[in-house]
Amino acid sequence: MIHNNIEVDVKVPCLDPGLTPAQLAEKIGTTGQYVNRIIKKQDGVVNKTFVQMLEALGYDIELIYVKRKCDTSGDTF
Image (cartoon, rainbow, N blue to C red; front, side):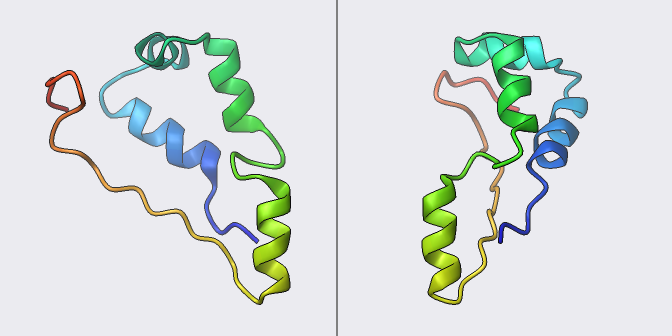
């Protein structure tokens, strides 16, 4: 089982700098609709088979996000 709520984990940091899903999508070269679909996807962003394998081994999954000091373009957050 994945303990993270991916939708909240992505939406809350977007609110801090005031990014919309469309603006986030533009930063990564995709569409706002695709970003929303990934965020709201019921199976989440982690492969279902991967989750099942780890569950069979007795593990739960927790994703940890670490804020970068700057992105790859050199812009600071």
